[in-house]
Image (tube, rainbow, N blue to C red; front, side, top):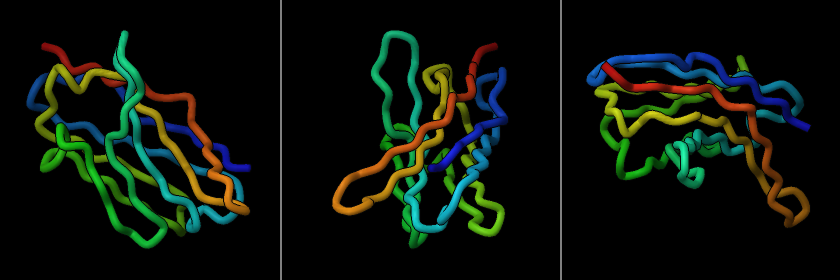
Length: 119
């Protein structure tokens, strides 16, 4: 079992920056791929960024060059640094941990932290 707790959301003006953090409790954090997803009202949840257990990263096209995902295995934390924020980045941001256990994909989710980009 992995428990995920996000923090850092809030209100920011367009063009501003914000950092999100997700602290994981449980075992074997370093073996999980960690990701950030977001869901805006009326929309489906979408992938924002992911970082594998090996440190490889992947980003949604809409955030490339603006967002950076990182992980600290010693602190069991994954972070998302967001710059040049746009109103369309407004959403609830969720932390995700996933890996295969016995050929089954296991997913854990946090409860989310809201981000509002507005003037």
